[in-house]
Amino acid sequence: FRDFSAQRWLPVTQAPIAPETAFMASARRVAGLYRGLLKAQLRIFGEDYEMIVKGYNTTRSEFEKGRDVTDPTKIKELLKSAEASLDLLENGLYQAVKDEQSDQYTLKLNGAKLVDQEPLEFVSLEEEASRYHNGKRSIKNARSDVDPAQL
Image 1 (tube, rainbow, N blue to C red):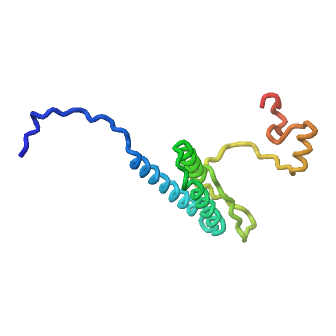
Image 2 (cartoon, rainbow, N blue to C red):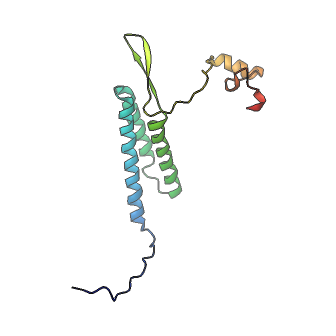
Image 3 (cartoon, rainbow, N blue to C red):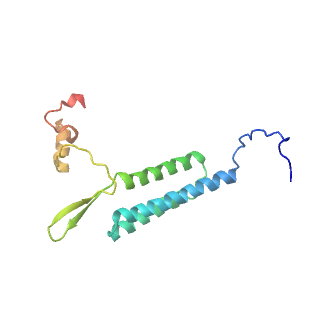
């Protein structure tokens, strides 16, 4: 039995992180984001096989593009982009599913946050282009009760 009461305990200083440890941490983070994106796509698109395959292929190709990146700032940008994509999938995406019997669409919200807003004005691209070129108000300020100068 060793007596530690006489030994003086000094605070441990923060040692710099070894490059291998930092690499392993970021590799673990990348793998977690990749799995998270794939799981979110499966959860959100549910029975829409075509969207699941497209999502998986897009995710894989984007991660493959960043496989050989070694610049730490570029890696941080890619990680932020992946985190933003995951957040969008989990919190900002909804899907309209057509009911064949009633010929109506139902919204699958999947955690999306709905905002109370006025209905959008739908116009053709040609009409929008003519509004733009003729100096008329655009879709952004199509409401009659809003002064375009305030936008």
